[in-house]
Image 1: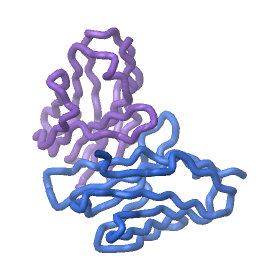
Image 2: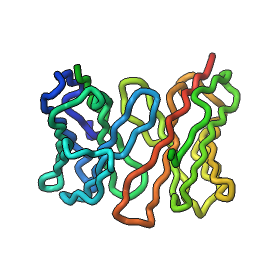
Image 3: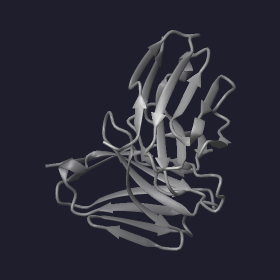
Length: 112
Length: 115
């Protein structure tokens, strides 16, 4: 399977803990995106990388959130001091052009 | 302010009939529009797209129509099949800004195709 993979698929954490998610994009894709999706809503853009450069960040991405893409390959999204409002599905997508994106299965975060 | 709106949360159609899913947008900078399909426990899957220089794009049973003056697009599925039952997301991108590869999504329409 050469699609986008995300790890873990599910994460349950207590409020105040830090969590880190990983995304492995399709290997030839230089663009990588993180989105957040809550129940009944569409994916909301969080941040975008072109190769290793983080080119855009949403205002949704508070200073508790940080994303990296070392060497332009996999990416990590870290949430520090988690809050209950962070509970959501975190989706990663990759693409070769600024057009259709290929999504991973997502990481479902539950903050208790 | 939601820039991409799908006003129908759900749609139910009979197998073999046409499904029409609608989407409205407000941002005039959007120049590329996409439809994604999402099954439970999976990420969205790209279905079909259309550039703002066109008013129609067809791919098999799926056709997307774009009305730029009305800032409206629609997805037609003919004939509808039970396997088409999923959540459909409309998305829009501003590709002129080469650094902004993001898509803005609507909240989705749940399509149910009854056998």
